[in-house]
Image (tube, rainbow, N blue to C red):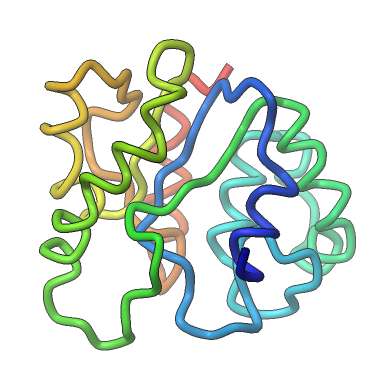
Length: 170
């Protein structure tokens, strides 16, 4: 099992209440949502964790990063989990992420099928939403967002925060 898979499995809840589905693991080996010690480039973690735990909204980024392992266990205990549409990194600068994510759909379905009955799914980024929403809905997955949520980075943090507050994460 590779480093990314090990980190993800460490924080997989026994019963997943809400599964966030993002694009893919990052291309760089020094950062990933489930890596305990990330000091930069972790906006997905920072904004998802603030969305699911409103008591952290006022925490500074350095406070959240300092408590990342503890917060990942809290995320797990609350029944939250983050999966990626593509299990392999999508190279930076890739022009058609949506096509790659669509090609990964059979593998994604295989990975999330065991959670279909008792889990709500949140699709993050336009490429994930466009590539997966219709197919997953047609297969009976309970998709919690009917509109696209942007990736919470590159200036889209406010739009992400605004969009996610309308999703029932309880």
